[in-house]
Length: 446
Image 1 (tube, rainbow, N blue to C red):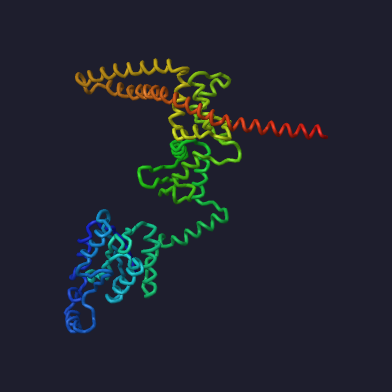
Image 2: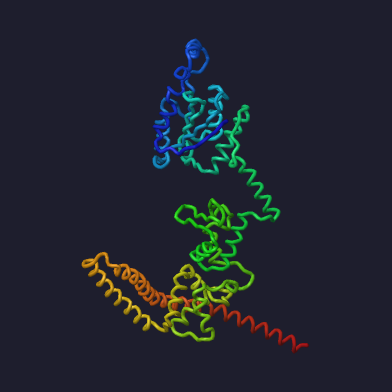
């Protein structure tokens, strides 16, 4: 049965030399018996081929040098140097001539003359197989060849299997080779509104987007629903509960890429005023629900007004000022700050300064104590206690500094928003007044 595999190459010269090894590609070198050797010797002067080696857009003798010239011409000498493909056939199913013919045709269809390549048929094992090595850099435009799982099944494997069937050879049927059928089945199920596991993922994502205000909250909400996220890679993936393999966000559709989801979180689309359907963050909801009728003043009032403006709290205004919207990407920080202010009942910057000074004083004291322990008793369990406390108190000190700085910025942004909103409100009042006058005139005329 025909089988193919593609391997990225970082040592191109070694691959070319291996593929064009005369000991592997020569009929004479691989004669299995005296009779075959005699037949080979008698036929060598005739039309029968000796070495099963071919080249595309280069020569077998100088293939590596030719490929290097193309790389240098396009200034792409780094990264993956080329690709090495192995095309195997079942023992006794093909002759060397047919195998090599299929290999050359296959390379022509796959590379379409854009990439230099060498094709060889190896006869030195129990089954005949082709090797194809091609340059990673295109001749005409210098673009690099891209190989991935999708291109393997839709291009490499599909073309190889089609050629083998054309010449009456068998191919290996695998679940991956049925990928096209599965894609159609998935499409048909979605058209008939039948549930698919990808549709379930999209539904979960849509629900989470309506509940959160920032990207970090979105990720945490998915994890709370049982999804496993992998963020430290080029394409973010998520693994649904009960599934063995993860999927990329971008394969779920154009509205489910990481950039599209961030945009949907930042600029939600609703028929009703934005923000009314979203629950508050749990910690903030708990703090505000303890005394629902209380009045807030000072810094608490400043932050609550700010969160109303950006829509974290209910009754978000239909029009969000640009001065406020510009800062919405920092919502995670702002929510943490307002929770800290409400929890510690901080009213003004004076209280904030006192708390920061107390925290910094405790940090100095703990650092001094820990340095002494490192010298006297480096194995003391007290060191771990101090380290844990330092982490907590440093966060408090940093929050105090950040709130002091950011509260000034918030005041400025709210003032800018007020100035930006005043002309609009004045225009709306004027319009309403004109409409009322027209209505009064109509009533009098009646």
